[in-house]
Image (cartoon, rainbow over all chains, first blue to last red; front, side, top):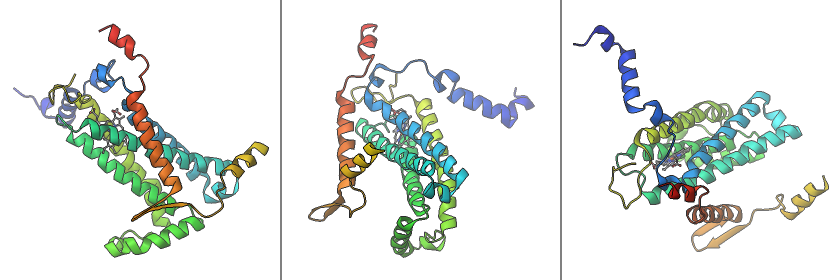
Length: 207
Length: 60
Ligand code: HEM
């Protein structure tokens, strides 16, 4: 007999989450032996770089363009932001190659792969709007070159690269939010499914 | 700051970019170097032994 407590959305949600992702799966003590390879390090490297990107971005937002263009500390934080982005993409690409050659979408892991794909695309858009938000000659050049390409697709009607305010908002609000939420989902999916076994094993026979 | 200007002189960043052309392929030297480094990192990640691996194998 199901009581009214059983039907509460809080109760149902808690049971569903606890069933799919019990604490020992969310934060496991051990991983299968095949995970002890450097190729498995690149997901966390990507995540760590993303943390530095967001941290340095928050400091840039705090002080504004004049500071990052004109003071030496501003230059330093600006460079920290750019170089952590370089490491982020570098690690993400090595991660992507690793997962591609492992066929890491096997055994019901399509959603893990696809959240990765969408995060990759969102990250490219974030980087692009970042280049457009520099507020210097470089960003002027990039946006005036990009506008014709983007306008020819029709997207210019709602995504105007010459609109600095809009590009900055996409860069510091919408796209980072998407990247962080997608990354969280991506990693939770890895936890729910467990790490994919190597090709020799039968698909789905994880751990 | 002398070492800093030395570094800056080693890698001049103020001039025009350098590009490589192979038929239809046209890529900046900087981007090409990054791609080569990613491939090297990928291969190294597959070949280099991971620390603690033997310990785990023994206990199996
Ligand atoms: C913001 C970017 C990304 C972050 C922070 C990230 C993070 C991670 C982490 C921490 C893991 C688990 C550990 C590991 O195997 O490395 C993982 C697994 C995985 N990633 Fe990513 N990833 C990102 C982008 C991508 C991309 C672009 C793809 C492919 C299109 C991808 C595909 C996968 C797959 C399929 C797995 C599951 C592996 C398995 O089940 O064994 N990820 N990711």
